[in-house]
Image 1 (cartoon, rainbow, N blue to C red):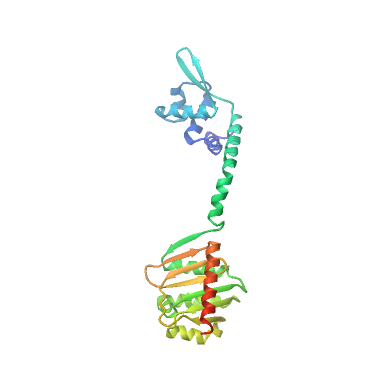
Image 2: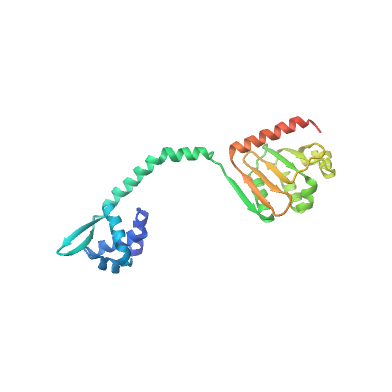
Amino acid sequence: MQNRESLQKMLVRAGLSDAEAAVYLAMLELGPATVLQIARQSGVKRTTIYPVVEALRAKGLVSVQEVGFKRRFAAEDPSRLDRILEEQKLALKSFFPELSALYSLRGGDSIIRYYTGVPAMRSVYDEMLSELRDGEDYYGFGDPERWDSFDKAYFKTFIERRLKIDLKAKMLLVPSEVGRSYKRTEKNFHEEVRLLPEGTMLDANMAITPRKIVIHPLTHPITTIVIETPALVRMQQTLFRVMWDALGDK
């Protein structure tokens, strides 16, 4: 036979609270008993026994016996737990339409995550890189002059690792001297580069993949935002393409 602690945990999994499980198990062990006896056996304070017993009575798991002027409480057959579980399943099913509606509103796979600090930012970019596959689109907005001064060593290795994947990479960059150098050497990096209009300033990097958007500021403190809401990813891809086409081959 399983020990008392295991049986109590099973009762909790069946839908009873910790106190209800302790009291019901004590009543099974004792047979008809007084509140004082149940309190001693269960370890539940006598002052809280009555509401617990009433909760068990409401579930059909406890009966009351009147013996003279004394009331004794007795546990009902444990087979009644099956009925409780069945009622719980029926109640849950009745809520399925509303739960499904809420799931649809959130977009199915909708996720927005926030990370703080440079190490977390690097982890986000590493994760994004590990998910990319040959032939996929990779779009980026940025100011390479600022990201070089921000974390040049990391972004250098990131680009080197990105080149190992045969991506359809397109970059919209601020027209700084560094941005123009990226444009001149775009073939070396297996990407297409177009420069944003003169005077454009960007205070954040943005990378867009088929599954997510990654945004982080080029100023401290660093908070990296990852958006995996499909509708927002598709919208950002569309906006990028519109801007790309509008700029022409600049």
